[in-house]
Image (cartoon, rainbow, N blue to C red; front, side, top):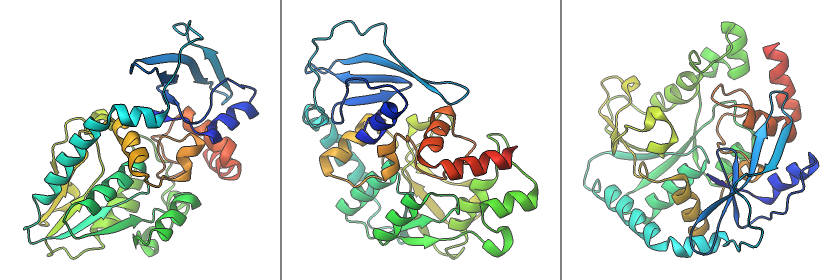
Length: 303
């Protein structure tokens, strides 16, 4: 579930769908455009579909029958959910502060995504001393790299002498990453983080992973150990694992947290642009509109 910003509304207009919505009160959730009424009920308004040829269709939802409904603005939803936000914020900060006395260097990984930015805000409100690191994957779009630079994050890099950048790597290995055979996360993110810190150092990592992001993460607990770390004495914490998408976005609005510009374009994820095999048609249609040259470059490689 994500807010619909004016940039995405304009893209839809450019594609021939001038529906009567505006930034500030509408949400996109699994292909359905929705809004809350003042009583807190969520209503389905339009169906949004991306076809195989990357054309789009926006049609009125079958349950959208009352044109006189009054919808609340995002800030109204924040106020209605304020007690919930206070509760989960307090729980997350208390969890972070429970590690105050541990003898470990504390690192927060930040992709400039919404979860990472919420995590960073919570870490700043806690009493932990945290350094923030951004993985340069060689596949992120300029908006993400520039945001990380502007926020003065530390940068970690893959072994470029060994792997090259992403496009050099797939050419040398003669591989197209797929969901079942990708390896790029390991080379360009996991190994980069692992190799940036001494193996004999005690580390505490903060990650913005959440249970409802995917089936594979639904079973994660508060403490997460990456088996690719080997026998290092490293611990990963997941302070926001119980938060929902709606929790994240409402907290962003309440705390006025900066967001990656890609969200305004309609993206639900902002990591690794264009070539990530975990993306789908809903992302490809955005790529084609917002990054036509990069989109075409990747299609030419695939062909």
